[in-house]
Length: 73
Image (cartoon, rainbow, N blue to C red; front, side, top):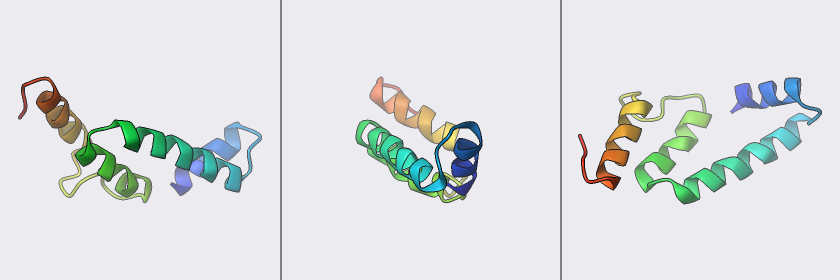
C-alpha cells in the first residue's frame, strides 16, 4: 500500500494520511462487490505481497469470473 500512497501523494495534493483513507474507501468498495475469494486477496496485494499463494491474480480473477458465468477453470 505504501507504493500506492506515494503515487497518490505525488500526483495529487493529498497528504499520506488522506491518501491512505482514500485507498481504504476504494478497497472496501471493491471488497463489497467482488466475489469473496478475489476480495480476500486485495489485502495481501496491498500489503505488497502476492495476491494469492501462487501469485496469479489474473488467473484467480479469470477463474472466479468463469464460475460466475457458468464456466470455470
